[in-house]
Image 1: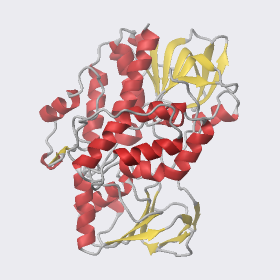
Image 2 (image 1 turned 180 degrees about the vertical axis):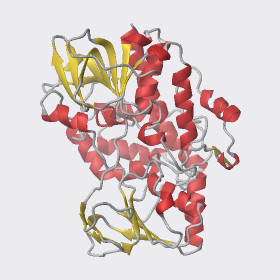
Image 3 (image 1 turned 90 degrees about the vertical axis):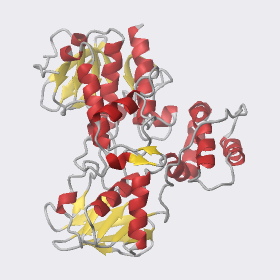
Length: 449
């Protein structure tokens, strides 16, 4: 996709502008093209080559998908497309496990890049290498202020900025201007070369990103201690070879309390890492977004506050490779949990210390932010300017079930949409690559019609 000169705001507006350059933006462009929308009517706006984004731009070969090969579905009519592509194009003997193939994240990123590149009309898509700082409605279209000082206008805009880079979730005190001891955004994995084998590494957060770090550290022969700061001394369970075998009959008019009760009764008494338990969990998942959308904003916030950690624990299960690395550290007494939340991080020339809510203060050589906490500046600006309403969780923009952004009066715009993980507060579980691709398919259908 060639880069073209950015429009002046006085020129004819582009038909469609996609804001973002990661996975969400790439699959949105791909599905628009597949529905016959001309590439020269589309602008794709973002500072990097489209397709990989924060999730799949990985320097480390140890960062793997946490789902097996048949689950990243970009084409609903061809769910095994990635599985076939990986078998033909990826040389990765370590991907094979008893629960399926768990490929490297960067290989999936390469797959997305190739898909978009090979789609008919993609070469005509205008690439704008900049970030959108501001969106304003103007004469029936949208004017976008870019971070290089230029502007671009479009009749229709799709916000597909994906996952925001993580930010430190607490105060940071440092006596040095910059330090390789502190890794704020660990997703690329480029920090690993700076870690010595005997360093005491502190992982802030106990989810999949922490397990990625553990897998990478073990892979490069780490000998030092690894401390995990987390509200609970537990990692997500390992993925099993589950299958959806039944179709649950969901009760109508569920309240949050009744939903929790129904799920508890439906799930078997077996371990959460067993195929039986995970099969039942996955049988429930297709229905939960519809139930979530029926709850009021207050009910959603209350449910997430009480049970959000349970959802994250069992929804984001880990690849067998990362759990094997964690068990290796446990066997060699190289990993420990510090239960609680970080209040302040202090970095000196030689050490890192973390003051916790419990009063404990772990000390180490490096700290890696594995919390995933981040925010999208464009969404925040739209809410602050009064152009968009916040979602029920007060974390992003509100959208309706057609992905239309809601204005401050909670009325949908006819030419502004948003897809991707940021729609979770409005629509439910929209984190997996297949869920995002499904949104892109549905929105492409709407626009094409």
